[in-house]
Image 1 (cartoon, rainbow, N blue to C red):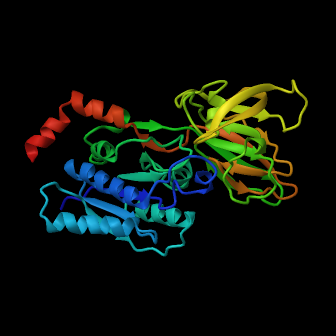
Image 2: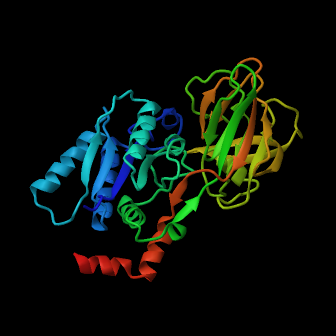
Image 3: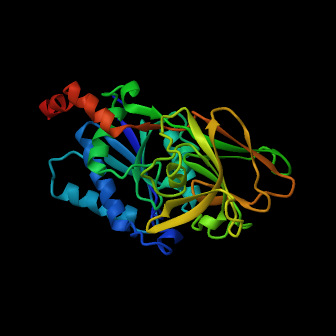
Length: 353
């Protein structure tokens, strides 16, 4: 008996609805559109041989709308094949713990791929547990640098080509950099957190609302990459010294505090949130080399990962940050479909229908 090709789907119901949406001119990413994106993803996956999808329940309506679409698709006898969708039965805490538990279950089920609908934080949560399982990254968050804003139907086709093995991993997948913060001394010794885009040393002493939304709060940044056309904290690096995703290094930047004397550094403008372009004064900027541990001088502040505060260092804690190439594997949608076209894979698939 042939084992069905299974893909996991993590659709964060809270992505694109955080406090930054209230303090900027960003649009809210509605529940209905997230459900519609999953539906379009199913169409792409089913067209090219994925027969089973595992996804999570939620209390905000994404799963309910998806279930309604599945029932309608079956009732009208649609010709387009969709995978069988199985809702994983797990307790719901309406927190990141749901994502962690869902990914752990998907790993036990040996999914071939995990499609992630969310922002940088959602992808970070999935990447912490997905191991060697590749991610199909789709943007539904606020300040997105890691996932792409891409049509889900097309992404589904690429995901299916990868999940079924039609396009080999070496042609379809990209290895990403990551930042690792480790507590090497103090009460929290041994604690470790990762970031896919940025670690920020924030001046605010408490986690509070989590999101970094004020440029005066930024004391230092560590970046895996810095696109010149990005948004969010990575755009600060992109405004001065752009770094590509596949570059062999990252960036380490420090910033002057508001009220410091003029001439304390280089003034920069950067879009740190939708509709918000802010001025910062950069003190230093240097390459962050792979494998070189640098101290995280948090002082009385907090540490934020991919835009959200996570750690209030205890007295005596000493953290270090390292850049490495052990981030998640992700599907390069354009490259995957280019390979499929050059090898006539979609033509062959059409002939089998």
